[in-house]
Amino acid sequence: MKVSLAYIEEPPFYWTGDDRSPTGADIEVANVILHAIGVTTIDYLLTSFEELLPGVSEGRWDMNVPIFATAARAERVAFSVPVWSLGDGFVVHRGNPKALTSYEAVAKRGDARLGLIPGQIQVDSAKAAGVDDSQITLFGGQPEALAALLAGKIDAFAATAVGNRRIAQANPELEAVAHASDATGKAPVGAFSFSKQNHDLLRAVNEQLRLYLGSPDHRARMAKYGITATEIDGVVTGNAAK
Image (tube, rainbow, N blue to C red; front, side):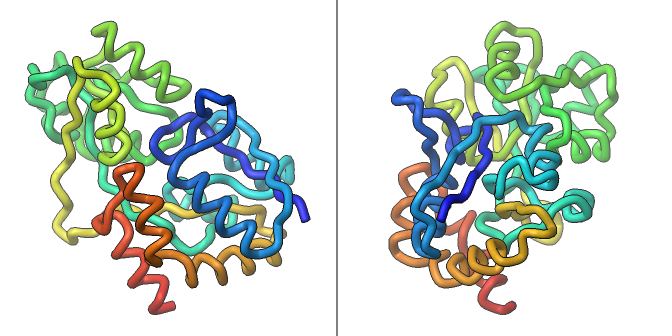
């Protein structure tokens, strides 16, 4: 049995390693889950964020690595049970010279420039907080946005707090700033996605995810990438209740 899985370059969740093979926290989860359901060959396909949803819904590949599961995206694809819960944050220059600690802080500073990736939930969050279009620069992917940040073309790049910590570790001139939780204390969840016609694969993956998520093996694998109980426990509890 063969399954094709699309991914993008977004450490620590998924990226192309030095040996040109896909690696990352969600890649490991995919490997474990798919092999457990009898998949013998996994074809990993590198694509762009904007191609993830149309690619899987049109049947160009079988499933996508986890992305945030929103109502709008659920109209186009079928999501698995959630695999993580992640809050947002910024990557900024060390010392955070413009004191950018939230989207609202960006909105209050007309000279603050924020880098975002089109289609990601950070775009909607920024605009909802009042960040003006003139303050936003859109990039095709994380590498391009980070290059602009390092070059001083933007003041902050918005992504997940977990991913930002890894970026800061790899770039001493940068630091990660996590956003405070909202009033509910809940962070958005992410999940694998499939074509709405691919019922059998979705069902098999979900059954195995419910067994695996939160297990000692899962927690140990995620810890290697800086993903902790904070990002795992909420979805494990929620999945068990379903």
